[in-house]
Amino acid sequence: MNLWVFAGGPISWLLMAMGVSAVVIFLTRMLVLRRAHIDYVDFIHGVGNLVSGGKSEEALVLCDETAVPVARVVAAAIRRRGDSARGLREAVDMAGRVETGRIARRFSSLAIIAQTAPLLGLLGAFVGGIRTVMALNAADLVTRGDLLTGLMAAFVPAAMGLLVGIPAQVMYAVLRVRFERLVVELEAAASEMLAFLSARRNRGGVA
View (cartoon, rainbow, N blue to C red):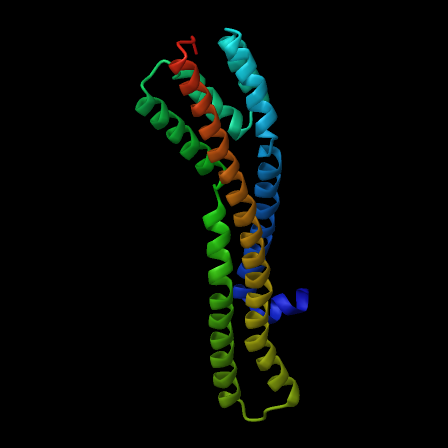
């Protein structure tokens, strides 16, 4: 691997740093997504029982202790339960946007790595090829070793660009799929909680 990096020059070092960054971003975001998952149906059922029993403060404590995106969205709905239907919906939507923005942080960095790594590798190939042609043109005697060194300088960055870009694209796609599933859960939980609070209000209950 060191031979590859030295043969590719500074661009290969940059690509290696991008590859490490992509792996770190992927693992940290996957951990966040895994921790964010919850059985929201059972959670909302438990919160609803507390609210129905007049224990809204205990329901908020439960949300704070659970500390997942769904719980924070539900907590926002409980805190604004006295607002109008429109105000309540806006509060829940805002909480949902905050949570999704927090979870999707650094997704764009991974996407940028996936898109730019192959292009950077191609740039490195062109630079290596140009330098090789200029060096061979200035040499009085060209050996097979000189030619091999030149080819390595051109091919290594291109190969490393693909080795970084392709896995980064796959990692980004995996994160997006899991993120979209979480967004669906957030929307479903928000709708269910809003329906619960609206039903209590229509019955004249104290939410």
